[in-house]
Structure formats: structure tokens, C-alpha cells
Image 1: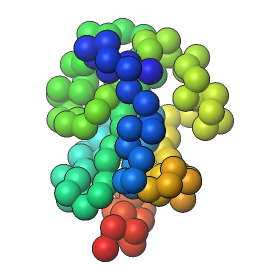
Image 2: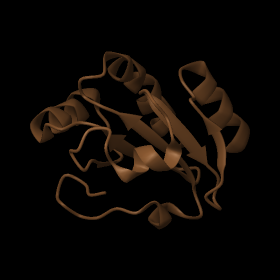
Image 3: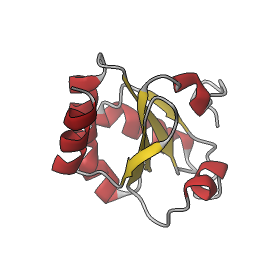
Image 4: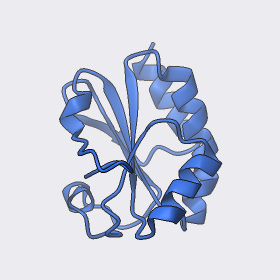
Length: 128
């Protein structure tokens, strides 16, 4: 999947860090309401071997990029602008957004569907 500039981004480039892969879309109101929690977690843990990768299920590039800007999503964002038809959705087998997976430094999934206080609690636990 590519970022807004067309650069291919692979999950393996984050190897060695805890990574939250956050699936969302500009049109998804529950996603947009969850974004402040994700921003707070990112700001708190970004210097503690933690990275975030936003995967948008948008089809409209302008709407996607406007939401990134409006919500202050300062981490790597990717989208194939193909909605829910991308390989990442198939790989993680989920049916609704917001959805996320937390990977440990080896790439193993250690949690999923972390929202609100549960996200903060899990990150505090693993990123002491």
C-alpha cells in the first residue's frame, strides 16, 4: 500500500518496534471520534519504540487527506483508495472499522480492537 505521495510502505519497515496498525476512513464517524484517543497514545508513546501505521479504507483521496490533517494524524498514513478491497483487510480478516492490531517487535499480533482507555492501558503495559 502507498502513502499519499505514492511511496510504497511495508509493515516490515517497522520491524523491531511495537506497531499499532489502525484501520479507519474519513467517512467513518466512530473512527473520527476515536482519533483523539489514538493521537494522545501516539504523542505519549512515539519515543518509546512505538510506531503507528494508519490504513485508510477511503476511496476519495481528497477526503482522506483532509481528515488526516483535520484530525492531526501525524504518523505514516497509507491507502490504496480501494475501500475495503485491499490486501490488508483480507490479511487481518475484520468486518468493520475502526479496527486495529497491535504488533510486537517481532511482528506478532498481541492485541486487537483496542479503543479508548483499553488502548492506553495496553500500551502502558507493553511500553513501560
